[in-house]
Amino acid sequence: MINFLNLEYFLVASEELNFTKAAKRLYISQQSLSCHISHLEKEFGVVLFNRTAPLTLTYAGQILQKQARKMLRLREETYHEIADIKDFTKGQLIIGMSHTRGRNILPQILPAYQERFPGIDLHLVEGNSSELAASLLHGDVDLVIDMLPFKVEDVETIPICEEEILLVVPDAVLERVYPGRVPELKELMSRNVDLSLVKECPFLLINPGNRVRTLADEMFAESQMNPRIILETENIETALALSLKGMGITFYPKMFISRQDAVQDRAKNLLAASFYHLNSPRAHGILGIGYHKGHYMSQATKEFIQIAKENV
Image (cartoon, rainbow, N blue to C red; front, side):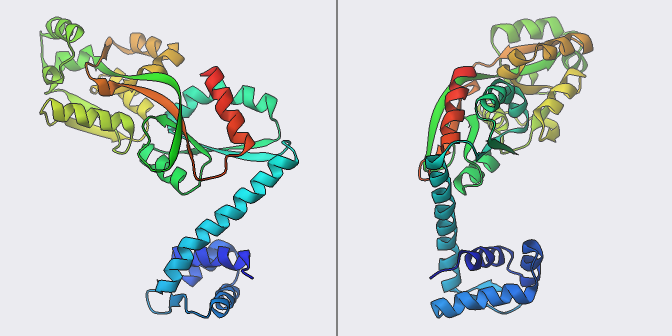
């Protein structure tokens, strides 16, 4: 019979490909780890590691690594399902969201959720769209809140609200790059947002991998322009704050503005800036919740989705 502890230790060793590092990560001795690996090799009658420098997996080890993840995930899902059947007083929910979106969306959901289900431990995993999709695929999060569609297979999605990306253009940037033409350019932009009108301006962009950055890159390509990017950041609020200080043009979700009147006040207090609607279908999207359709959905996850649909 397979020992789950042996499997867990093997999986860590297969990821680290270094027994010393794996043992340190597991808080056990290297000798103890080697013993667990030896038990598995005896049980299956195969060698799992090529004990060379560097350490590598044999073909049997590669197969076991793949299946071990499935077995351990099935064990975890079984425990969750049994716990749900027993009662709904304890549980865990791991939510994946972008850094800024969590600040804007979760206050509308979590207070109501915690009030109804105080026994559920909540955990937040933050990252960009690519990182969150990978976390969902590997079962590291129960659900992800992000723009649809999700770029990962075997995911069911539930739409919760509309979203729009705006172009933020400070007057100071226009005046610096196109002196004396600010009123003219603002008039043209108000009638039809054409990025070629501001192609000489500096841009502040979120890092690649984020949906807002993907939109920006696609629009630059459509306009056949190579933007002058003076700063890339993981935090979209940083990009906005610097834009409002006159450093450059940026892209910003309308939802974040509507959730925070303070953003508009900041824009007025720091300097004049215009928020333009982009003439592109890509700038309009749907915010949704995604979950892996091949994994067991806990009652905690189901209740979170329902509350999100009611409150966002």
